[in-house]
Length: 241
Ligand code: MLT
View 1 (cartoon, rainbow, N blue to C red):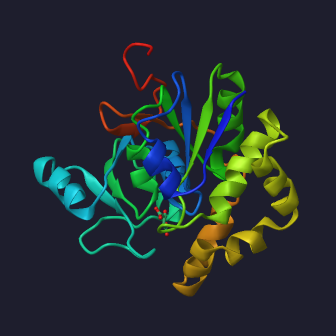
View 2: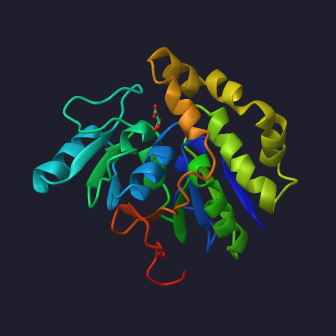
């Protein structure tokens, strides 16, 4: 299996147009965009439209007033948005048929950089095993889009990539990183730049939720042509390249 590690925004911004044919893109923003997406979609949300900026989210709602807005800036909720970027907000009451436009600092942009992938899925610890199953069955390259924090590499996304790769390409350095870190993930996550920010702004409990394994065994797919993430398996391209 060919593993393509896109460690940070500088990698996925360069490689966005240049993935090899038949590549599966695995987007990872474990703190917290992909964890929140997995929680939301498994709790009734029908689709999520990842957007590149806050204005785009508001313009989607202006066109379709029933669409709710979710996301963060600096980790906190954005004024005028209905939800933040916390998976905890999507527990409990089912959000049946909710439609979300979502903006986050890095995570939603990482989805928008997957245009040359054959299929695109969202990964987190909350849905780890279904992601591993999908990756194990894929007959082509797999590119890991680690969302990162700002412009930087983020340890926590690399650890989740490593947890997947450990099962399919165990000699890869990210698999070693995962094996090295796995005995104290709560501390590793808290020590990461994004984790430390969540602690600082009072959202530390999100870290523990995002570390739960397989709580929501769903596989979100992103359809680049429609611009939507939902739970219906489909190819990013209508025809194989
Ligand atoms: C991001 O997209 O950078 C993250 O999801 C940020 C966060 O949730 O704090």
